[in-house]
Image (cartoon, rainbow, N blue to C red; front, top):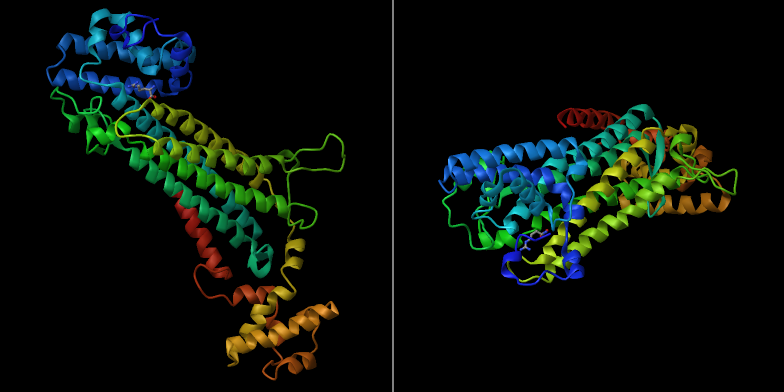
Length: 458
Ligand code: ARG
């Protein structure tokens, strides 16, 4: 087979060296984008008078037929071509002969491959966003199902303050919604037309790039042809967005691995989303969650690897840039399967409210006890000391606030009234919160409503 550039050489390429550079094995995923871009390019050349009307017609019709065939039969998109661009051109020439050889007029694969990847991301990012939104919906459903159930929140993985279980699920939903927005920003970064950049210096044919951008649905044309030939910032942004989303999935997975274990028992994993052990009959392992956590390393690796590749390059197109595609495809597939697996687990979790509520009472009410004293006029630092001393004593005696007699409250501080025991409950603690982002039940109800409204917009 001959490459698009064989004319300049008098010997055939070394098979190993040529094979090393072949990208068709993976860039075939860009098939439909490559054809879409080529159809628009042919029309732009035609409008500029650089292609005869009959040739334009023949090229466009043949490309449409090729697209149809590739969509109908994925096996059609194969061969020993160097890359997807060579494949499409070969098929075109096979169909219409010489007219097909005119398509590449004034165009370079450098701008073409960037265009294809931009079109690809624009097409695929919404699917990732959908997968994340589906997971947000599962979090919202868990929040709804939890009702007024309470659980401890943690800092330093030590019990901190009581929160509503609903608040906990909406916390994860909030992070996932930022990922959704970050993916949208990456898509917008990719949303620029590269055609007209040529190999690096621009094209000498008077194609109407603004019209081309409109035809391909781009919001703008790139600003500088030299920059465009090497710019893969949108790839880095996409890989960052997928990495951070994976970090959030990993955090959720890690929480649930802990919370569904015997020691916590806050939630029960459905049999359907757990696995057993080949040796220990009692085991119910959270394998899907562990794999999600593990795959986050892979996504971060793709981002890191890509930044290192970009960092070594001088201006202009360099073949190193070919590495962008496997990074994008792998990160995309990783986030996609991980979001689906996490959804499968989250949507089937059952809450053990008795366990979470028991864990939400006890010494983690210390801040509320201190706030009680503050409400009676004591300075917070002073109240912190008083309650600290109470905690020290309760710990030594293996007790918590609920077992204190009125005299004992009074002994700790004169400022404790008869209502002190009632202030030291998990429910009173959440009800005492005032800010809109807090775990106050009314605030959480509104947050859930807002989350639902957001889901309707996705
Ligand atoms: N397969 C190449 C890539 O992915 C296409 C661009 C080739 N351009 C070139 N000058 N060799 O980057």
